[in-house]
Length: 101
Image 1 (tube, one colour):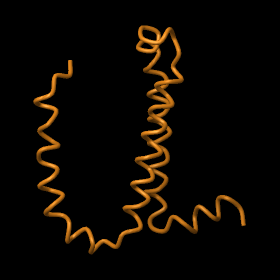
Image 2 (tube, one colour):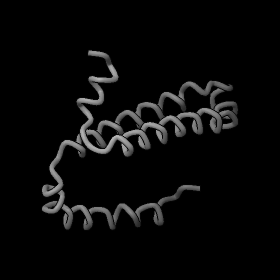
Image 3 (cartoon, helix red, strand yellow):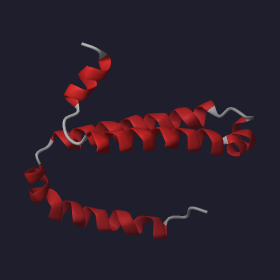
């Protein structure tokens, strides 16, 4: 069995959504690599690898979370939705009070 067939067998659901996630992930890698040049030159002497690898690690972690959420049955989200909404409100307002410039 080829790698493509194994991935397709594991990722049940809408293949269009999975392809959109893959394409957006690749575009995000390209965007971070191309946009990190000035910041890398200013902070790290031109080494963009550190920023690229940091983004890649966060991206892989995010894709892993997407995969875990894909494994859950949709009715399980119904039970935890009110709790997640209450958690998301402070997370949404948190950047308003941070000292990011």
